[in-house]
Image (cartoon, rainbow, N blue to C red; front, side, top):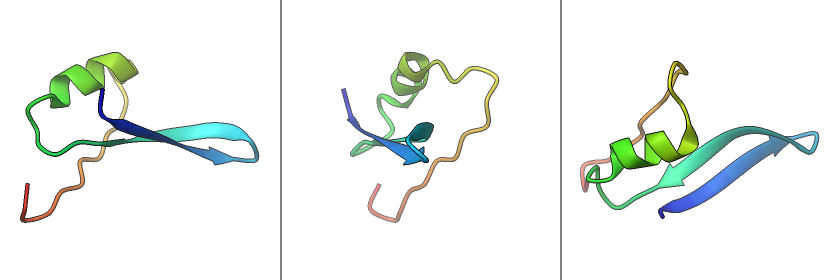
Length: 48
């Protein structure tokens, strides 16, 4: 599993940040997080 950071506000989980080295397991990560029907952001840089 990739590194996962959950961001909290007032002790309530707001969103998760998934850190991966590449896009090869992107769909698998989305499925594990049950994000179907939600808005997502993919942040990358020129090294990916």
